[in-house]
Each structure stands twice: as structure tokens, then as C-alpha cells.
Image 1 (tube, rainbow, N blue to C red):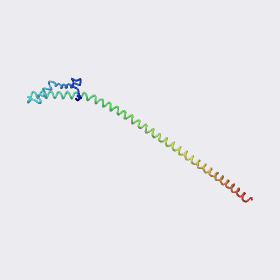
Image 2 (image 1 turned 180 degrees about the vertical axis):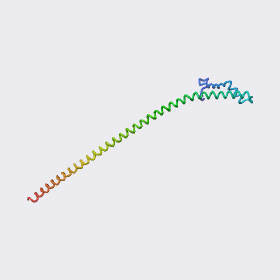
Image 3 (image 1 turned 90 degrees about the vertical axis):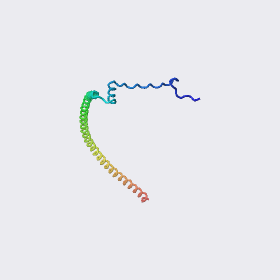
Image 4 (image 1 turned 90 degrees about the horizontal axis):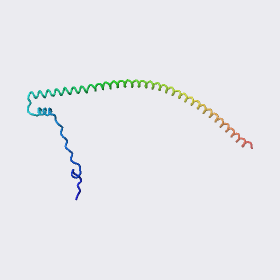
Length: 158
């Protein structure tokens, strides 16, 4: 025999969920629905509906105005804060541009000094190399002269 996979409320399982109650409709709304969907209305019924619609519209307009005024105030306040912030940021940008210009000028001056120092070092290095080559050539010439004389003495002295 196979086992049952689900349990019902009698076996200790979950019971069925209760159905949700329907929202209650107020009596005037029920009457309005009857007037709209029901038999043809009299002039008095139409006037009553018209008056209710107008009062509802006025009530909604008042609520909208009550909500609208604080929102406008908040928007204006936020706009003022943003304008002040933009003005402050523009001042910072101008200050940074001035600072960047000064830094660039200082950099150019420093770069020129470094370039002049490099030229000076290169000139001194070239002079030193020329001096060393001159001495090396003289030493080479001197040593070759000594070698030639030594060879001459060996060959011609005997």
C-alpha cells in the first residue's frame, strides 16, 4: 500500500485558509450605484447625484491644494539651497582654476631650471670626456712610443 503524501486538517495538516471578507460598501455609495445602474432616474435623483459629485470634486480640490502648497514650499526651499550650492561650487571652480594656473606657472619655471641644469651637466660631461680622451690618447701614444723604443733597443742593440 502506498503512503499518502499530503495531510488534511483531520490528520494534523494545515486547514484551508479562511476566505477574506468582502469590503463593505457604504449605504450612499450603494444608492449611487443603484441610481446609475438601476431604472431610469428622476430629476431629483439626477440633481442629488450632481450635487454629490460637485461636493466630492470640491473636497478633492481642497485636499489637493492642501497637499500642493507644502510641496511647492519644499520645492522652492530645495531650489534655493541648490542655487546657493551651485554658486559655492562655481566659486570653488574659479579658485581651483586660479590655483591650477599658478601651479602650471611654477611647474614651467621649475622645468626650465631643470632643463638648464641638464644642459650644464651635459656640457661639463662632454668637457670631462674630451679631457679624458685627450689624456688617454697621450698615455696610449706615450706607451706605444716606449714600446717602440724598447723593441728598437732589443733589435738594434745587439
